[in-house]
Image (cartoon, rainbow, N blue to C red):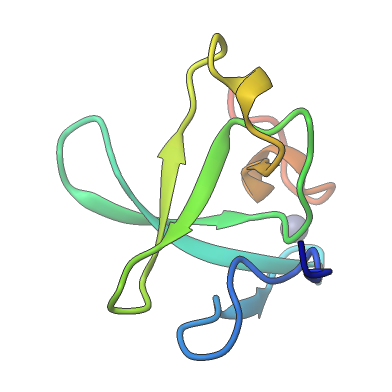
Length: 97
Ligand SMILES: [Zn+2]
């Protein structure tokens, strides 16, 4: 296995866009995901993998990054989980609070 940077979902063409959180300045990766109502939205993810993560990112042939929600039962199978930055951003209040 080649040594892959933790920041990279893939490499070369179509590598994910790294952006900066407007609230805390941390690096985030934007990924598309299908919301509960069936529409497509964008979510920021922390750039590093985390065992606490809830989503896995994948890259399509077109170079788009999509986030798949992984059910808790399946999470132990993945070593590349990511957390939604909205949940970890120190400058944002908890969504439920
Ligand atoms: Zn932030």
